[in-house]
Image 1 (cartoon, helix red, strand yellow):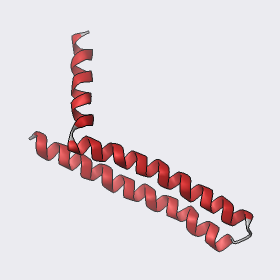
Image 2 (tube, rainbow, N blue to C red; image 1 turned 90 degrees about the vertical axis):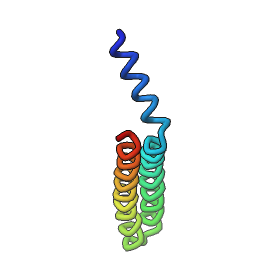
Image 3 (spheres, helix red, strand yellow; image 1 turned 90 degrees about the horizontal axis):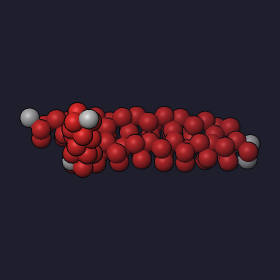
Image 4 (spheres, helix red, strand yellow; image 1 turned 30 degrees about the vertical axis):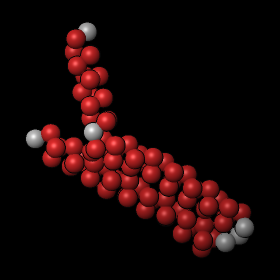
Amino acid sequence: MATSRIDCALAGRIALSRGGRVVWFSYGFLVAGMLLSWIAAELAFDAGDLRMAYRWYYAGYGSFAAAALLAALGSFLYLRRSH
């Protein structure tokens, strides 16, 4: 039981730290970027513009890469501050 409370306290401290906020922002950026690019790709596909549909489709992968970089930055900020 005590271990669970310690784990929750540590997780809360990480989530509220500057690095933790960057990581949570990166997850939001990932979800928003993938969702918006998927909607735009579907709209372009419905309009018959396959070239633009594929561009939006691959833009979703770009948002995934950007979110991964932001998560790495957040982890770096947290680890640098904690040591």
